[in-house]
Image 1 (tube, one colour):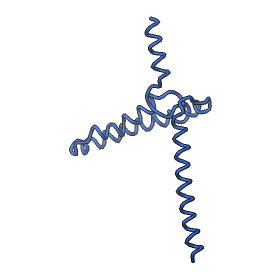
Image 2 (tube, helix red, strand yellow; image 1 turned 90 degrees about the horizontal axis):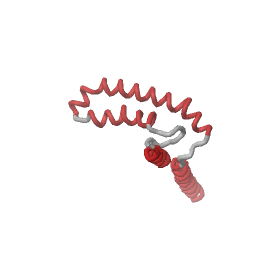
Image 3 (cartoon, rainbow, N blue to C red; image 1 turned 180 degrees about the vertical axis):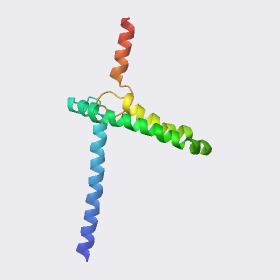
Image 4 (cartoon, rainbow, N blue to C red; image 1 turned 120 degrees about the vertical axis):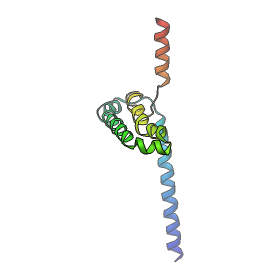
Length: 117
């Protein structure tokens, strides 16, 4: 009886530890903003077309749900979730990057171009 209880506790602690370790590894990868060539190709051929499909599908879903979200007063929140989020992920991300938005490298290049003109 004691062995069975200890084994269960050990198994539970191991599972919790494994879940925590996988989260730490995942967050370290998400910070990386220097994608490899393979990540860029995968993004170009798989993620961007899927993002475009999600943006178009989200727009259609938003239009269909618009009467209901207007009555509830959440049309802006629905638009943010269904249209703007997928559009940002598809179009405002460097090729191969995981986070939408401009990186510091993009901002610096823009300033250099502006100063050069």
